[in-house]
Length: 339
Image (tube, rainbow, N blue to C red; front, top):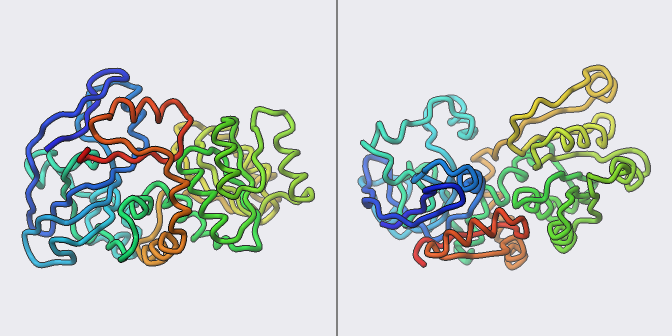
């Protein structure tokens, strides 16, 4: 089968690897859509990597035993290879599993572990059925396109009564705009990329603030009559965005951190936590029990989701796909492994 690979700095190739085969409760999925996410960092870094991707949607084509899915089922592939047996997995919080499978130890190699490939292997319980009438492209957004901010909004119970601040308008942040607007919330977004700022407004954001302006915080306060937003969700993963979320959120509000970050953000315990009474939340993904609601939302949004997808590329145009992604003028980019 064909599979994406990074072979050098800003150089991608399509390589041939062995087809995977079903084993126990691991089934083979023919990947029809592989959304592109943080793999662009590997593309920029240049270290050779032949096993890329963590989200996909497609069709089950091989099973080894009767289980939760059958050949022909359309499914969304959830990230990682959680054990399915620990307390966290049983509670639906599989994303935080501490006993995830060593894929190569189970299968003898990493063949089938990548999602940016024509086929992949996944435990059947980490496959979510795609409702009838929902396209595979739309369903694929149930992973990182909509999932991280959906999980944050589920935990903080955002409703139409709330004002939500979203910092960072990459694909995850733009998905957050859609999630917030879907719930009826007023969405204020933050980014200095003019293309993405306009995109956020087209998705329904009330206003977009440029964080490089010295008055950014005051602009947000002015938009909320000096009170601050009810909830902030950071999708940028940078210190300045973290601080803006903390400073722009009202007393007793919530701040959710979604964007991956290696930075050390200063936190002032008394003014930030004790006196403001903020609730700080780390949110990676959403609980498995919420997958029916996610699929219901995707069904109801329908064509609206086409706005979140700015580009589609066949696997044969992998280099162009990554160049587009790192250029910054894009929303969610979908890779089509059979093109």
